[in-house]
Amino acid sequence: MSIEKQKEIVMKKSSKWIVQNLDKFDPNNKYYTDQKFKLKVFVELVFVMNPIIRRNRMNDKRLFKIIDFIKETTYKTDFQSLIRRDLSGLAGAAIIEEFKMLTEQNNQTDLKPIIESQFINLFNKSPFRILDLKYSLNRIDVFPKLPSSKELYKQTTLAKEQPIHTLTNMELYSMTHVLFYLTDMGHTSIKEILDNEEIEEIKRKIVVSLYLSVKKGNIDILGELLICLSFLSNCFDEASDLKEMYEISWEKIVNSQHRKGFIPPFKNTNLVSSNQDEFELNYHSTTVALGASLL
Image 1: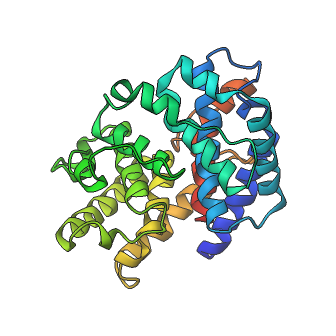
Image 2: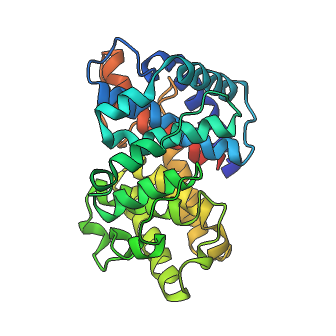
């Protein structure tokens, strides 16, 4: 089966499962009590959909259903009041505001007053989280006085000399997201920011991470890495050994997909009987796989 066909299968099945579970992506839902978790789930869906909209990859009716759901949710939810109660959600608010800009909504929120009043608190974070917030704010034309993306990159896991096999799941996750930000989700060549030596080291880390993720059955990180490959496509030789690893990676994801459409974070994740548990366990890896299939 061709890679394009595999991507199509993943896209159709994962988008169907997401549409069937949109009520659980709603930050106003009654399934979960943790407001921080509910907001996180919604923001992560928006985060995946934004680059799909930017790249004009809206090629399926289920994707439009997801977009309509996000629009409706942004109109009925006061995200600004949620953020004022918990400033850690500011990057998420910026992601939602980017969605409003991309879909030309007229209910945009000005986040500048929050930033100006809470600047010290907002940016007392790790370099990765500062880069995360900086990128999200820049996307909505807000440019706080912060170190450059390259300066922040040099302090992240991606730039450090640490063996890949020793990294935690969160460190691998941060590594992929730093690449998302440096490439502006594939709209900027990383060659404009980093030198050849730095790029070669990143390529090595991506290849090793792919290999280890396939070997361990870490489907969640595998999806993140496949998105990175899309954004770094101009850095790899098509005739390289990466081609075979790319094919194996997609085969791994397709074979992991459940008949319901969700994709478990790990190949050997035990299925659970409760629909709520099923959602909480699989929503992130399924959403990431959807993004990987379209970007």
